[in-house]
Length: 200
Image 1 (cartoon, helix red, strand yellow):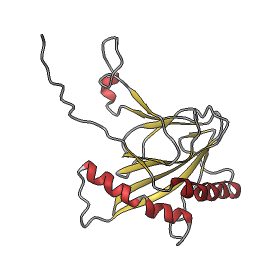
Image 2: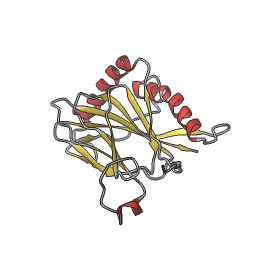
Image 3: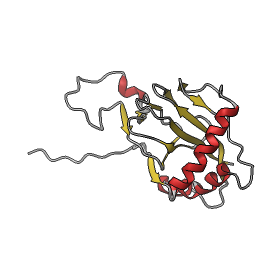
């Protein structure tokens, strides 16, 4: 009998949290985001295909819902840094930018990364069943160049991995990790807030 030990040396983590009191929070965030959409239906074009991408939120507006949300997620950002083994003491860890995406039926986001920052995120304000999974791609592109025929799909030969999400979920992940969003096949809007984090 062959005995072996599989050493997983270089994992690429995605930390998944459920926010406290997310239903109350999401109600106000949804109202804020739809208000932004009504004022600027064009939005901007980035990874979104068919969806609406807002301009960056104004996070300097005190007592606003977007600023309250930014304050609320700070404890999760700190926890993520600590899980990653990154130094937090005497470090000015900050959210550099925050925005929203509304994906209506058939809308999706193509694969992309978030350069010039350490962490990126996806927070789910509105997410019904079949609204589109979060899909991460293996950042090791060399593994796609040549490989034997695959008989059994597993974590060692997969090129992508999907995460099913629900309202109130917060994903935090290294900004270099390529990711995309599958097509919204539901009849409801899918609303996500994303933000980037670096150290000043």
